[in-house]
Image 1 (cartoon, rainbow, N blue to C red):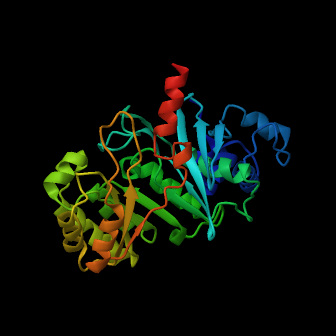
Image 2: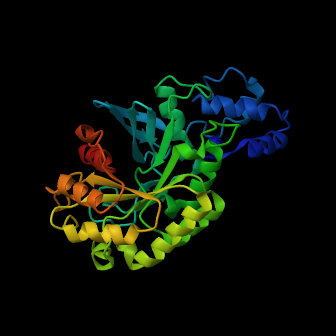
Image 3: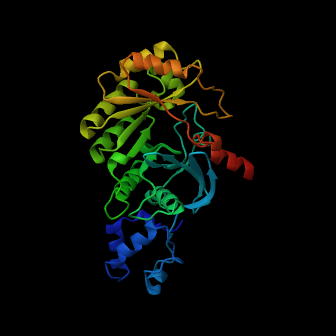
Length: 343
């Protein structure tokens, strides 16, 4: 695959211009063009001589292949340059538009309720391919660099962000740069299944974003059954990293908890969440299980009662509104459906 221009930050583009014997200011012109979603044919600011030099590069690594309109969300299938397919969703709220981005093609974490992991990890996305999702959807919604139509970013799509650490870190630095979209760290959330050592690294490299932990059980043995990563990083290790991140970032941590019928939805499970999170500034986000036909799991019938129990125990808790469920909103559902239809 040819080099992707969106993988370059401004300083790297300036170095590229120097190598091509072009003026330094061309780098910012090129970056602005890329962030607007322009390609070599639609760019009108750069001279033909420079565009000829850049003709072997990939300008836009993400193409919106299909869009599915829901009641309060749009689900996207994106095509990559190597013809791999990934997906994402933009959700429309009163406070703004939140884009959920993918960080890998597939996933190797093996969580028992997730569709993204069924095919395993195919490959990591580059920083430019992650940024390209923001570019593509912002353009689709008729936004630009200053008047962005995306106000919040959540790294909660296909893949485990901390399993693609270097590319994700570069993306975070680029998307928050004043030379780019200038997102505030406070408007970015990163969801991890619990890679403790990389969580510690994130606390040093990029504190300030909202850390979201996919918890799904506060019992070590039960969590190991649901989430294989718990075999490598215990709950005690994970919570130590969570506390470290909170101290260094000063931000509230969010715990995601998918409710599975008869697995993790008892009163004792609620009490265990209370005990595990005691003393941590946090919020519990309860998630009704999205149906995945390859998994023999059902969403809990006890969601309302489970929420009430947690509130009685003094926990900050809400039930997530499953936006986009009518358009295969669960991570990986839409991609698998597409692959099955094209086989």
